[in-house]
Length: 246
Image (cartoon, rainbow, N blue to C red; front, side, top):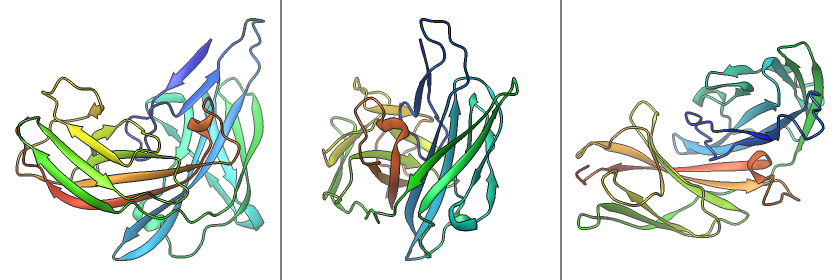
């Protein structure tokens, strides 16, 4: 059987961020884990900067996880994810982003389960330099109660997702991941369509951050394992005033 986890409050939200066999038909209860390092690009004060996100996922509950950076860059302790005892992570705060290029090479994770099992896994990262989605059209449709957004292709991007964030950076709307399409409808909670999840109701007249997240997966990913083989993500943020009634 499989355990499926959904990191609802993670800024890098993927609909199913991890799927790993918690047990198999032979009753094997051995400890297994997967790690993922993601380079994240965004613009702060008109400067393109990059941060690094780290994830460790186990098929048993975890008690600790750390990652050793390439080229003697030191060790970073990950934090338990409140909504899943099978996940440890560290996502970059604004202060963690830098205009300097992140370290390429092998990131080594040391992961420990709550029952004392230990495992060392790694993720090798190369810098691609994913660019940002540029919005070329957007409009509110009061008849259909949706916001339409269109953007140009991002070279190297394998998928896109759209989010709304409030002034505190909390996710208001988290859209489902889409493939090569480069347009999206954010539909209000009262409409009979399902294109994502509303974490809170939008308020007419409120200004939100509209984020288009472009995502590039590791080379060799497949349709069954792309969700934990992310190489890079870029955030294209813009301010938008919500003009629809809920």
